[in-house]
Image (cartoon, rainbow, N blue to C red):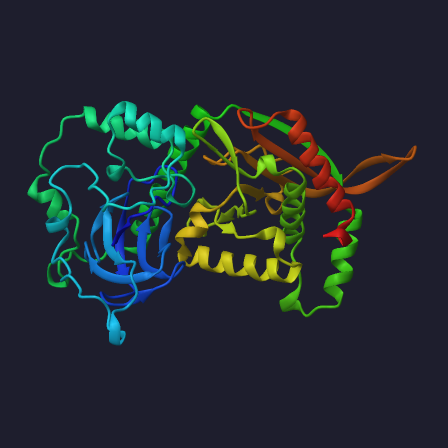
Length: 412
């Protein structure tokens, strides 16, 4: 038996609203299956489970506002009983107030032999007397890191008091008959933009506070890349044409194979290089704000697969139907503002990632090659790196590889 917890869907997410259950007690689920929809300041996110099993019981009903790390449901990791029937189910709890603790403290996890935690965090927890069952990891795939232990230790020092009944009651939407009239669309849009800006502000404040950035810039001749793209698209229907952004994403992914130190996370005062290359691509929302969902295994995808993945991601991002893994798995972020006329992008790294790649517009500039002066289509590529994880030489190697792939697009 294990607990399915409210995940952290952003560096500074504190709670989310459980909008909808997509399964019911007794249903068998598989790792990666979407089981619920959670409302956040970034939109409505489809939340996946990360283990196989049977939904035993819901801990909270749809409509509840739940803190990160709180139990949403219990999952029986065992298989169905003899005869194909699931194990005996516990009755679902009638309300969130019956399950959530009487204090702001996160409820303890059920005993589990597989707690994702680094050795440094485990050692610190023992020194500070932190119960690991009460800690929700905010690292990749829910891993507990040093910062999680420190926050839990601080929480232990704070006095706790019972939550007022009004607060508990407010965590669940009132029945339809007692709901207030819906606000005008303009008000909802304003609230969403305010929430989005607040989330971005918190994340960027943390990044500027904790990450010692360094910046590098290079100019890349895009003549070969644009010629290749034009020839490739002439052979395709309009619906199947490849966008320039796909070339940039693919080139970044290939360059990361050569320089993997920029593909990962800074956790427990150390660089942890990620196994997969999951590129977070910045997508502008129509209501305002940016979201950077991940394109998983970008290095393994063909141009057509990348184009389809990007098209699907943009549609679902703007429709507010992203999956939780797409918001938490990105190992590096790529942002392109060329369509806005921006020449250079100097971005802020999204923690716990250690790098961000920025692209400006492709414009005609003077270029000297082989002693000959000419005009070429040039893009300015920039790298923001975390100086704790890498240095300028590593960043320069990455930009050199990126430039090489874009100058030789047939190699992509």
